Length: 127
Image (cartoon, rainbow, N blue to C red; front, side):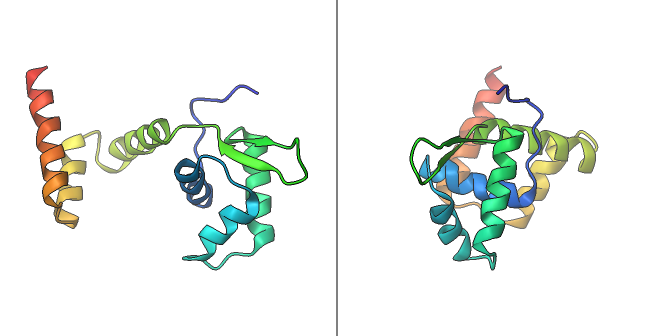
């Protein structure tokens, strides 16, 4: 099944993807248990969402055993790029500067994050 580069996961699908990106592979029950730690959702809801995600090509499913094993079929990086790109265009009028200023204004980065941001800025200046 070919995966479209423009797959736009819903917020609920993104929650499931975050679990799969972190774990690599997981059963519906494993995903549901992790989601249940911070969200009140039924097992059948998680199952249905993951079935829909499989049909959309967002996840792959190994059904060679009784318990299906799922893994993400889209990368975290591509998904982040798509979502941030759309946000920059629609919410910040195409200005990545405004996005960065808003992001840094809402939270105080720790020392490690500031160092990483500085490295990125230094690399951009070299280009």
